[in-house]
Length: 177
Image (cartoon, rainbow, N blue to C red):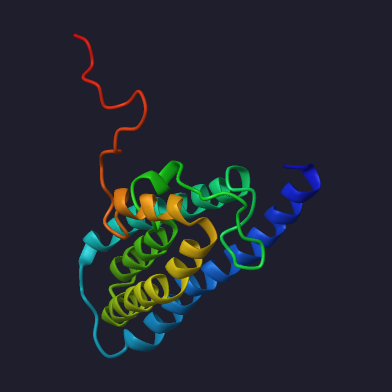
């Protein structure tokens, strides 16, 4: 990939990250500010454990963006899609790690802000993401990448990460002891 294309894709991804920040950070903070006046989860010091999924989810999102740019030759956004099907990195364990990272961030905010309203936003957000994946994104990827995407769907789960990678060529043999 040329340096100019890498820079363009990086700038487009920064715009995309701003959208992700808005959906995963700004809206939950606004919801919590409105909703916590009525009811709070009251987790006490345990609420600070919310930083763990926030940092983990943020790391997954950033890693996935890099994977799309440097391995896929594009971005996760429809206006500059990847040239190749991205099945490396976190995409070896789940088909939607970036969305999972966003959901982790919102889960962390639910804990940190002690907000049942943000928890409802998390559930509603997951349902919308699932519908978008099944109804819009997956059919587009099937048309674009054909049989390779079909094989990927058969071997990698949509949401719940598989902690073990399916053996490929040269993999999966027992280690010599």
